[in-house]
Image 1 (cartoon, one colour):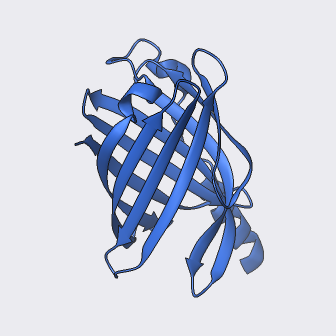
Image 2 (cartoon, rainbow, N blue to C red; image 1 turned 60 degrees about the horizontal axis):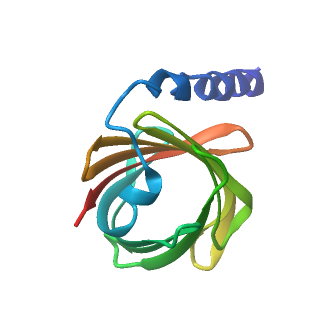
Length: 174
């Protein structure tokens, strides 16, 4: 009986509302990914576990370079505990509003689409979790342009289809 209740709890926790990209098609300012991320940015974020507890805080220095075909984003993370990590994304525009990307640890291509001021980016990654260990998780990453310099990011992180946490990040162009 306890196993059934636990399973029902996990299923219900996984069944919550998520944004729908079409809801933002008319919202502005319009997000042009290659323009917003071309240059230097700083981001501040937190990781919150599935119970709502804040587990990690971090600052990210980003440098984006758009060469007309590829947007290369170099992200240098510094966590509150002093740990540092670098991730380099290479994003390719596949259509007027669609993107594909790769980065170390990403399994298969990351794919994304823009509508109005929103960008939805999904991918699976073998994410470092400390002490040389990794965990394969999926990101349902949402970004909303607030003004020409500010972008808000909310990422739902799941494993085996069950949400295990969220990342919230504010980006600011330098």
